Image: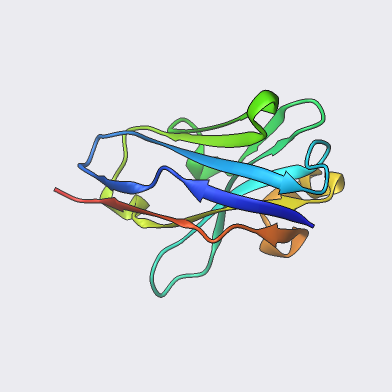
Length: 128
């Protein structure tokens, strides 16, 4: 299993930016598909983006393109989610997750069921 720890959440005003970090440990995480998800109160968990750590290919849910950027730093065993132009509707708990390589294939990367290992989440609140 891959252990994941998220950080970087907090409170920010609309239009602001945050960078979330997800540090991986345990089983070799390189070669996994790493995804970012979020869940707002009363709503289902939804996919944001994924990165195949084998070659850094990135995948984005259409509605998340443009404001969110996923990246990795192999030296730090970390996957990042840069979030810009934040809106109140971005308020949610944000999670990173690790899945097998093929989880990044096709449209699978945005499905919760494709990921076996999850972090505890980091809260993001956007309000004025």
